[in-house]
Image (cartoon, rainbow, N blue to C red; front, side):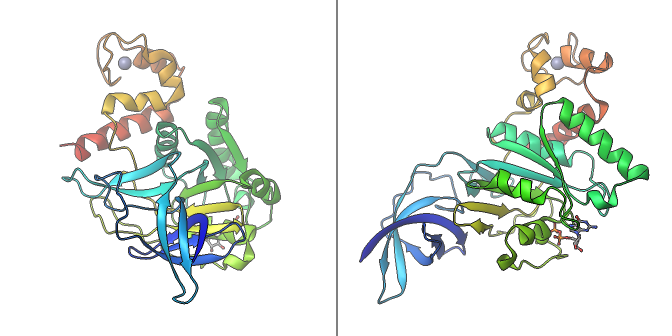
Length: 311
Ligand SMILES: Nc1nc2c(ncn2[C@@H]2O[C@H](COP(=O)(O)OP(=O)(O)O)[C@@H](O)[C@H]2O)c(=O)[nH]1
Ligand SMILES: [Mg+2]
Ligand SMILES: [Zn+2]
């Protein structure tokens, strides 16, 4: 039996698809005595995990022996009441936050929610505005300009691309080369179309209603990692709103808004939520027009949702 190493690109619960450096995919099971380091996780391994395994050519199946230590991972609670969580993806280099200003029009707060998730996990966020071909003039163009101004001035990396015309696609493909990225975005923004442009052999279905598991529901969804090349992977994520923030307290959320973090040290209370507390430096900055109203609104919404999620 051959000892090999690779990266998990798909998990179906009992089987893991592991891709080696040559780009070959092996179907593997977990070794019976596999030691679970993390008992609070409902799934021992996930896409993005790097493992060593033994391949039995006769049986045409492999056995995973070891998990390499994770650089990071994103998880979500397995249910509102349980202390257990489900690990969604591991070893991420980038979070590609994909949006469009028309068809669909980006919903307020979507970008910020994913920026918070990226900041909270110390994973580099990259904002992609797709469908620029539909935003050349009028209100759509104004919206795009406003969003580019907000996120640009906050120092975030922004890409304006069109999967249809090919604008900036080669450049974006080079940007993600050699990295593992999680791509997120509302249904219909063009995630699958973009991935197909990066690697036509993926042949992903487009215009598919993603298997979005509405808020409060916790159907297990299996995340899949798409190889763009041997060395570049993109994990498509159904838009889970509560994704990966459960381990934080509400007062910590503003630490993931750089412009709030900058001033919140001056708030009177160190657990200030920046709502209506006396001596709140964030609220003051907002009133002085030093924080964009869109950003403050999205912050309030996240805090409000937290109250629902943490009864
Ligand atoms: N005009 C235009 N349409 C696009 C672009 N990218 C994707 N689409 C279309 O948007 C629809 C949804 O795309 P899809 O990739 O399925 O979105 P997903 O749900 O994010 O994976 C499809 O009809 C695509 O052809 C683009 O850059 N411009
Ligand atoms: Mg899709
Ligand atoms: Zn405050």
